[in-house]
Length: 263
Image (cartoon, rainbow, N blue to C red):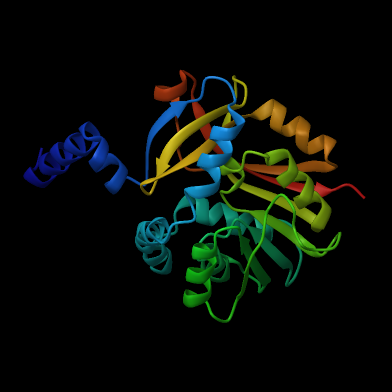
């Protein structure tokens, strides 16, 4: 083994051994299962972690290298899947709203990887995220809005694209209902962490150093909920590895789902 590899391995062990280093260096750390659903604790943790400017800056730094690699022709699998899923709808120049857009990086991903143009809008409940998105992408539309109460009329957008925010919203059934309501043709839930053999589980963790809620969905229950909401599964794609077995005792994966709207 070469010296640089040995140094990196030692460095990783040191980071993982220290809670302070884990939370300040790793983008995702310290998963812990909640014993029962304490609503007050869930709401408090899920509503504050993404609001801080420091969280926004750390997320931006984490994705900077991924965006650069994409521009070199080496997009990460989740970037490729997002573009492929939107292209699979077959809609030329679709209107796309991204729910939970964060700092707006997926607007750049899709603009780079999609084979056709789109009309993009991004929303997020975090003012800090939206401010950063507007600063980086001034020609694109971003606004502050609540995923559980979208301020749009029924059937407004060809595609509702939920990046990776579904997993962080306690009232996820409302998010799915609202997505189905404002979508004209398709709903796309991207990078969703699921258990194939276990029920939906609520965790706490640190994301970019901030405490947040994370939901790992029981796939069967999630599919049933989407069907009850009037969504029909058209295709699914595997995503980046994401296994929380150390915290839950069950293996998890990420998947992307393209649903059509039942008229």
